[in-house]
Length: 321
Ligand code: AMP
Ligand code: MG
Image 1: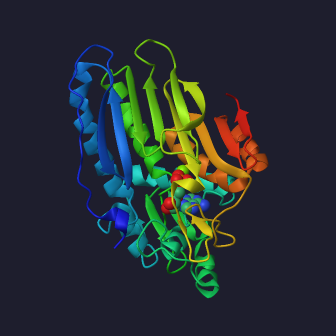
Image 2: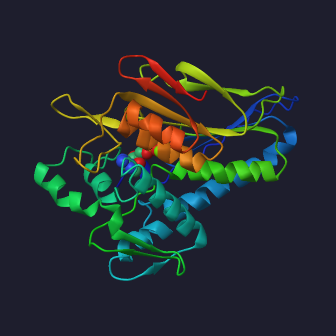
């Protein structure tokens, strides 16, 4: 069983001071990471538990590792039959498919069989043999996923295919949570799903938020630069986020290249996308990491988002911000 999918205890830490504009941080261990929600007004607290509930509800739809999720039902049955899905899942799949097409698979929703093979982050993680990799490569072609817009159904044209929404799920969930807070009139909040940040509204002072971008070489909370934003997602992908070190000392990280079957490698160490659409930001941060700074710059301009890349040579590239 995947280590990080063991049922996790929900830990909530409430800092009970209720002075106006004082940050109150609520934390849970979910989505295989540390999730935190920061609110500032006493009346905002009552929405926070609802946000954690929403988060778990959506995770239960899109988690490839949860046997009971709607996505698992697709992965189990879509080769044998058309699988009819909810409008919500269908929209997310269509969005993920379109970004897969545009990035030509740098972000690839059909990456599931390769992710399962490497199992990075689980107790089964290992370097697969080259014959195992050869075997799954033909299953990663997204053009063998057929999405029927009218019927809202999914079909796989090859046996053994699997959709993985791991590179878009946290972004999608933060979009839903941001709408939930905004819809309830919350003017200042920070949603942080393991480094996928959504800055709701503005800082209580009325100024933009300042969000630190994690320095891959230091402990959590050490930043290499900051960005200013309001009503915006700041989503980061990096090989340092999840990896293992093999017996030969080689580091293998979790963002995979569907063409080679191995972890993707480019001049980017950490890729952050800044835009109000957190779903898009999540997909593009993964794609840009894999593509490298030149091609990533084209993608960033095409989608009209902002980006910050930390490169292997230590330099920082900022686009639009
Ligand atoms: P992220 O942290 O958003 O960059 O997403 C990484 C996760 O997405 C991995 O843990 C895999 O579950 C999945 N994944 C790995 N490589 C890719 C890829 N090239 N395209 C889409 N999803 C991927
Ligand atoms: Mg991503």
